[in-house]
Image (tube, rainbow, N blue to C red):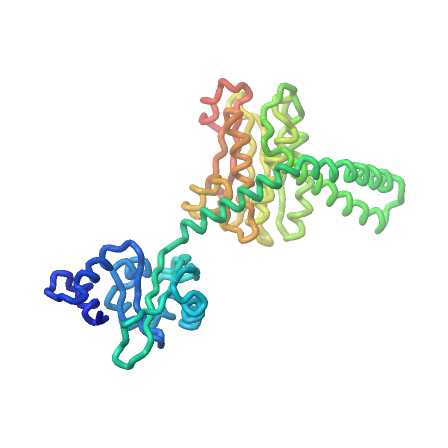
Length: 371
């Protein structure tokens, strides 16, 4: 079989070419990218699917070097030597002409009886875009990790929260007894960090809990407490903060859940901001006191429309070290309570996240009323 005959049958499937025509029609119909390369890395032949995956014209691929469109020849030769019959599958990252980055899964095999005019060895590279499958695999792994953490989390939190509470109590006592000065300031810094840790544990431990409560609690105090604890974190980054939580009567909501929601929303805002930006928490009753409403707004760069549409999806994150759990957790707490979580552009170009929950569950309809 001759590569030139195959190339002719790929580009002119109807041509009367006996040798290679049938194979060419098969290559044209495959949903997998296939290229034939020589030992030097030049692409001798590419099927239409290869052009689709790599987003380059088929004629442009043939004659190009493989390292400019897929991966280095050294990587391919190493893969071929490791698995000469193409049993193993490898992967590499590829930047497409439009700027999109994809993950390509490929296998490579040396080709017998196909020798170019110079007598060099040739290889067949078979590949697919596996970006979607890699994303599913990553999400599966994160779900498995989350399930494992969920199994051991209650006992870990119990072991941590009790001694942490004892340490906080001891430091509070020392803070009140010693005179003003550097030691007292240092103790206050330690106490602030302990309170932030406690708030973090409370937020993690609240996953799966309900926002509504049969008991009436001081939601305004819970909101102020959570926000003031996080102000130290904002100050470290040079971010200004403002708390505008109005006094409210006792409400049928879980104070720990309110603190957990505020913790996630405020931390997201802090991560989105830079020095000089501002994070503002507002909370109070709306719609003639029938709706509890709280909002966290920042003056950061804001979200792209595509990101805003997906930000409440579990594990979706734009940060390299983000978990993608925060907003999904808040939404999963608010919706069962008959409320809604809105993510909108802020008045100053940042992001505003608003939580609206009717005081009476049956009054869900009022959550879309005037503000």
